[in-house]
Length: 288
Image (cartoon, rainbow, N blue to C red):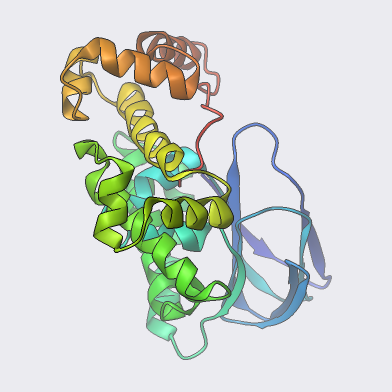
């Protein structure tokens, strides 16, 4: 995660966010003083501090800060977002939030805006002087920012534009967060939601372009990738922690989703770290 304090001085500044290369990332901006303008998803918003701009799609969105404005510009990659979003009951709402392009006024939320600013200041300090446990600190600070934004939005960003269908999709994703380690079949999710499997399939494919089975598999594989990279568990122990009774079944599942065996992926990550390179990032992940 990279965070840069920004001061415009006597001149306005502009940024255009194009498709990210390499690791997928989200970008956001906290305007702490002054004014600006953002163009995203075909809409233009005027900004007046305090305000936050989130670029979830990075598809040509534009940001302008007027002379004298100050703030923080940030970029965060998927691995840290995975940790920050977590797998709690609120995770589905956070996942939907971070995939959006939006501008949010923090006017009237002085305390919450202060929390976000202090978290970003803490991230800058942690990045400049990393210490043991820095990854945990960054994840915790990012989670506070995300939850603060969700609270300020009052949930309105979560529900715009898709009505009942979006609500069902969000409920499905929340159920997945709670039960993916239990290997629920699609029929059980449909029953829990009170819809047919065909209806659930239509909701998922229309909403995110993937089947319910694919979303479940990718969430499970995403968790496996995180644990392979960040824990010392053996493959057998890791498989058991994810609900697999047979390590061979886990290995076959992992390869079917990611294209490689879990042991090979772990070795590649370790080698990349020894050579001070970015670890390989699976290309499958729709989550978060």
